[in-house]
Image (cartoon, rainbow, N blue to C red):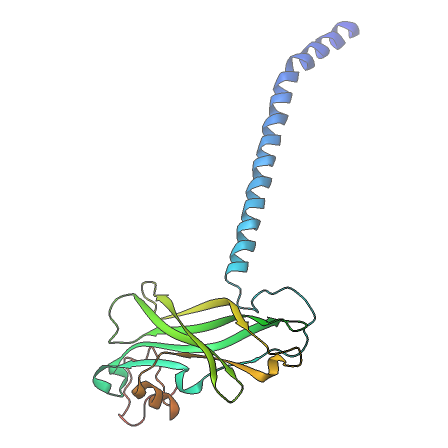
Length: 231
């Protein structure tokens, strides 16, 4: 009787072997798919973080022959404010923009040119007079001999896209191809300056110069012509 019972159990297990194998294969396939999906999610996350990083633009890690050029935002061109009929009231504000900051890195050695990469972060706004959901802003980057003449100046366009219901967006623009020649190896990056600013009208420049600015979302507030709402 015991021998028959053992034989029955053996046959039963033998019959169940294909089902067990199929179940194991199914679990393995599920595990493989899960690991693949997790790997793809992690790769997508790292790619997004790299694309949207606001930190210093990438440059090879080398020891420079000297300090990097000074990089700063020109105050008179640091903000862009459209005012309908030049009226300095919150109800007259159209598109606005502000350069929040610039981060840069440089590379040079010997008598080689200075190579600079930089990231510029912009904050854009939609005022009561703005029409549509997108706006192209123009800004410039100038390389100068420090406190002297401009060596070169280039203009660029950056687009702001406002999702429904939002009146502010932030955009970071990278530039990685700034090359500054040097007369010889004794000339360091400290002899140069890189300036960034919006293309603004004389009225906008004056508006910035005296320190005026508007809240982007202050459409329901009131400001006198000579004293706009302060940010």
